[in-house]
Amino acid sequence: MVVGAISSRTELAVIGAGPGGYVAALRAADAGLDVTLIDRAELGGTCLNVGCIPSKALIEIAQLRHNALTACDRGLTAQVGVDAVAISNHLSAVSRRLRGGIAALLQDAGVTVVAGTASFARYDRLSIADNNNVQHLEFDNAIIATGSRPMMLDAFPLDERTVSSTGALALSVVPHTMSVIGGGYIGVELGTAWAKLGAIVTIVEAAASILPHVSPSLRQPVERRLNDLGITVLTGVMADHPTDQGLVLDTGHELAAEIIVVAVGRRPNSDEASIETLGLTIDEGGHILVDAQMRAKQGIFAIGDLTPGPALAHKASAQAETAVNAILGGSHTFTPAAIPEVIFSDPEILSVGVSLDDVSAHGLTRHRFPHVASARAHTIDKTAGATYVIADDQGTVVGVHAVGPHVSELAGEAALAIEMAATVEDLAGTIHPHPTMSESVAEASWLATGHPLHVRR
Image (cartoon, rainbow, N blue to C red; front, top):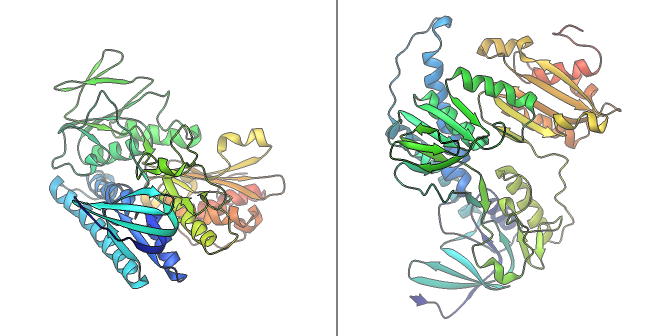
């Protein structure tokens, strides 16, 4: 191994080039700091390369095929072949294009990008290993944004048949049968996509229901849709071990599965980069504890999946802004009124703010607009689900939830309404374009004001 004898120096070292790390690097460079961004893999991190971006591209392709094959009653008939290799190549191309855009932005901003695995040698010095070469980097401040990785099961080691969520995005053929271990959002999204591409899918979930942390009002339309798609959902059972033909459950029942997808959650990468040398406080879940400015200790910041809270790309990006502001001497804190959460199931699920399940306990009111009364939902031929607006006794919007087609696109408006302490009158009085799913927010708000329009009083 060749070790560099002389250290270089930077004002800010950012470890991890995902949606937290690269945003931090860009913001800091825009503010005039000398920034070095280090990552052992591709720019964009898990989200861009093997997570949210390729998975959503897969979902769109699967939906195209499904739409074509199920539009007979709307006047269309079609035969659609599936080339899994071409699909995989398309997913890679989408990620590659976005990666190129990030690289150009970093270059324009003057960020130094270093490929390699960073480790803390001490609180102000990093060792960066790349193949047989090691270089050293001293810094004034560091932002740790190393993200998370899929949790695996000891009984199900990865091989040609057993894959993680990453492997499920790179299959070269559509399997005849697929078992998905884990009924959280990742398992539901991937299982639904591959079912629409032609696989016979079974989802195995240890909890009493799939999407166990989602309100029943939002979860149940998805459960009905999975049944309509022919996806078998087994709850309250656990996968015990694989066999040559599939897997065995703890009940002794055996499932046929050409491919087994392990999607049981993610764990923070706080056990990497020699983070333990810094003496940071890490909770039982492996999360680094930080203050409201994302500071783990003087000069050291942690953001994204490493910190408590939902493991979401947009949370990481927002925390990056807070950490950079703190480094620049600002007083901003990460105290959002709400963090939007979206599940790209069928139908999609949107949750922002106070949960539907907490309405009664907090003396709030919820107002439901069913999508069967939505003109846009009828044009899409997907009328299942509803949009809910939750308000306090002053009419202030404290939660917005929806399950239905394209409701993920309502998340921005919902989050803005809560952040701005908008009232139901504000939403009801805002002109929404027709015909769109965004009208469902206004319709639920009209209900809240006592003046419903497209539903009976």
